[in-house]
Length: 467
Image (cartoon, rainbow, N blue to C red):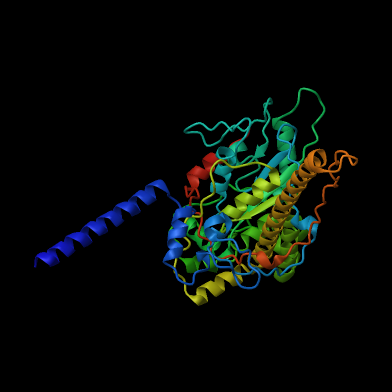
């Protein structure tokens, strides 16, 4: 009996020590990107690729514990590109001059995590002159160093100056005018600005379900202007899906049944040039032809943007933004587990219908997903090449110094000191990387819903003129 009691006390003490260790670990090393947690978890997952083994088919060979980009989705499987892109499509580094006249324009698509990303832009970037964000104010002041001019056009810097959730068509026609009006120089000469458009996309099914849940709670975007070709659509061109102030409490079936629901293919429509299809006049062409034109326009605009990220891949999004604009974030992006959209359980038939309602968004996301991962791979390959070149140059420098010392002290007297061998710096050959070391990304997004899920009143309060 005493022996059993002793064993019980021993096990109880061991469990308490283990529990204390887990609590300390969570306190000292919070978050999903903690390297210690990743290493510990790999010990308990037999056969998991995160454990440090190389992936089959030419994986990068980097362990997840040492690579935050692999740790994000915990897989080393091979990524196989589907679309052919040129080097200029993949190489995304812009000469952004924050002290000059350049402007970053954020195209914020609903329920893609844009609120969180927008806050990163005003609160989380290392700047010579950080944005001034005051408690209780919806906007921050993001001035250039030494100037009272903004370098960022977004919800949290200039407000909804071109309309609530303005799309590509609205922004491209509105932003230059707004900038010139709000920052009219004392002289009559208008500065020649470079506008760098950026956006965030999300898996269409998850985004659609998230928007339904948002609308179900009473939110609307009635304050959106939808200006195209200089005018807003008529009520006949853009009917409402509901009567009254909002659509709160609507079922998913009612949400899907409305033929005028702007949630359908929202990402494609917001990234396309709507003037190509007669704006909101759906009688200008057939639905199939209209969708195809909008999709090609959205792809073209997306590819030409300075940057776009994907909700499902936060660390890669951060990496590409930092590399594109040569700006650094203070704190790393976080891939949160669990979203409101993920908590919605829908059957296969409902998912199939959602994908059909958003078929143009599905095709656009497949294109964006492939382009995004190819850009990430390309940037990482260039980074590795540059690191190799630096190591080679350092070895040459050390070898040359050794040869020089040998000539001074150990060479033949008649030869004199040996001069270091001259080498021209090697050039980078872009676009010739091996695609075998890519990662297969998980489609289901697990970030988000740090979204601002406020009601209509909050959105209307954000529609304010930028002064």
